[in-house]
Image (tube, rainbow, N blue to C red):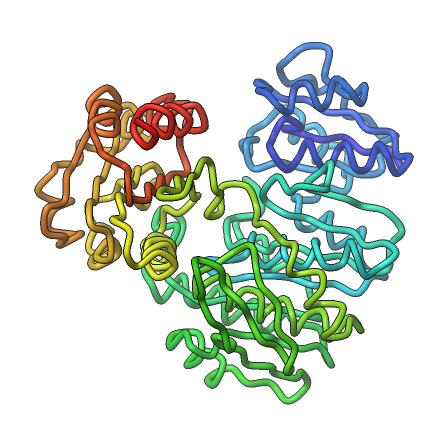
Length: 457
């Protein structure tokens, strides 16, 4: 196979390019900018473009496939050339399906928890299956890549609802046609793509309709919106498996879970993670993995990067970071830390960084999201607004939207750092939530500084 990538430098696109190179395909690509770690990863595999930019001459009739990334626009010169030649052009998810037509396909969808459930599955499958393919949106310990395409009989995909490409605006998860589908919950997100909740909800209706006949939908019945949607869209040609919060206990800061009468201690915690484990458990059952095998494997799962990731800790303090940005994710993460450590003061820092989170019209969705925090700070930068070409966001809009007594709002990196260094962390936990970087703060280094300077001193 001779494959060309338009916009090869994307975080997931370059991983697919590497996977196909390792499979033995001839891979080429172009991009107008390639950042780390994609640049080094592509260079290591010998497929880093010699120079940045778009080169229509790279697109020729000998190509079997052209894969189009989200970063490329619909007037991209290489795309125009591919169309002129009548070549097969696929978005990322469309191509994943082409590579997995003969495989058992597992797709993990939902507004929150997709990455965590996929990571849990991959962790268990690594111990219990001889081989499997995967697609996940985070760096996972024990896996060199975030995309793997081989001749394995099973593929596990994190299936998100964002558009597939510049010329295919339908959501990515509409193109996977899973045999085993998971929906973790529905909470309005991506307001820039889905301007109304009904429009967002419709994407999940369509996803349910794409499940292969004789397949199964594993869904979180404790999510009222999702439960209602499932009842409204029931099909006769697929099976349904509801799940909710499994039996669990918390003792001395350690959570234990019970599944089918078998119990184990866990390295992760929080009700959202326990429900994610339950979803992964039902998927594994469908793949022939026993409860005993699952319990043994899940006990060693330590989480995905930036998903309640423990940065530093000692006997009286833990510092976590989390990718949380959407309201449901923020609330679930804060509640999890507070429930796990009820006697510790919780300092929660949230950076508004996505288009939705910086949109004044979306702010009411955050009501009560930070309610469980003892100290709550919302940070955002004017630079993020400028990059997204959005109007200024006023503190009064945030205060009204979050409706959190004592909420502190900061827009300056130095102000945030000064605040964090002033806190007494003895008997406290710090939770740093962002899909950005707080205007360039090295969060891992900051955590070390805070532990060493404040907690021990």
